[in-house]
Length: 182
Image (cartoon, rainbow, N blue to C red):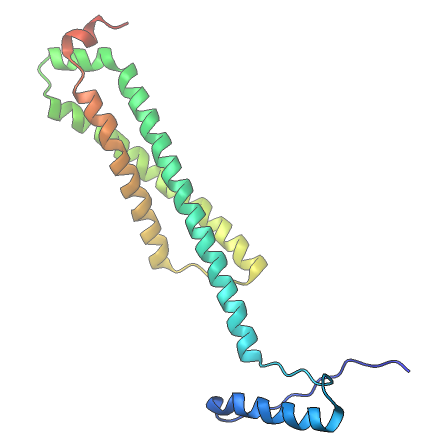
């Protein structure tokens, strides 16, 4: 004789009495059919467990994204520092023509801001595509436009902060030394 898997659903009008109803059902069915013959599940708790699991996954993804963003920002900073050092002769000529440290700082800093803005927009575009793909495969939900705007701002701020150092380094290059470099 094969035993078929069966289920029976009950509904309680007052959600505060859900636990009490589950205990009553378990007591009745255990008494009637014997111990271990009944399993009572509450879909609300299962849904809450799934929601908690999704929240942990999203938190982990956010942590990894922020770590990647920081690493990318440090790489951009190093690239801009290398670029400033390669342009020593140009900086020397600008200083010889009377450009101040502030003017040279502003030149390199504005260039870094534009690069950072475009990189942030490209990164957000890629993130949006990946988020849509994730939403379709895992049913997590859609992207909030405010979070998208916040992502652009955070990415741009991190890039801006990490580009201050290369701009300072470029503005502090002595004119005489810069003119001698090849």
